[in-house]
Image (cartoon, rainbow, N blue to C red; front, side, top):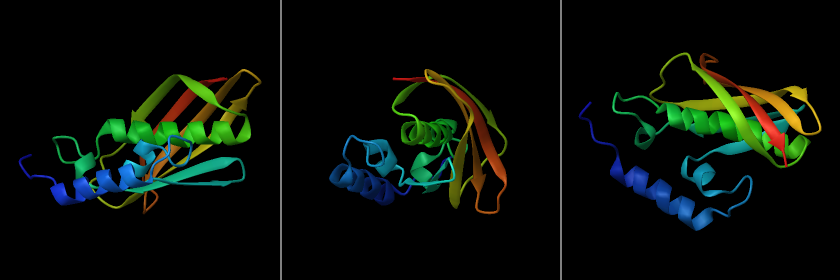
Amino acid sequence: MDKPIDEAQARDAFEAALRSYHQDFDTFFLLKLYGMHVTYADQTCTVTMTVRDFMFNPQGSLHGGVSATLLDISMGHLLRREVGAGATLAMSIQYTRAVREGQITATSRFSSKGRQICFLQSEVRDADGKLLASATSTWKVL
């Protein structure tokens, strides 16, 4: 794919993240760079973001690493809110379909909640509700 990214948009996103981040949950740099918004309800965490071309892989769709970051953030934020800070021990991701535009949403929930080890799952869906990726993870409570 030879289409260049919108460099002004990428630069604006980077500069906005530099101006507004704090290295803490809900405000850290990557969350700000990708324009992610975090909400909580009924023991779930929802993280939304708009897909922008500076997030693309060379094939012109959202890079899997960006999807993985979105999934990880949704699960990590839920863990912190419900149990406390933790570290990802393992994460398994299944990519279902490519996305090139629009808003996407990751929603996480617990599969099992222990005192030292927790298991979470998350799904990324597009605005039409189509599944884009899903993950399961194991977390160590710190």
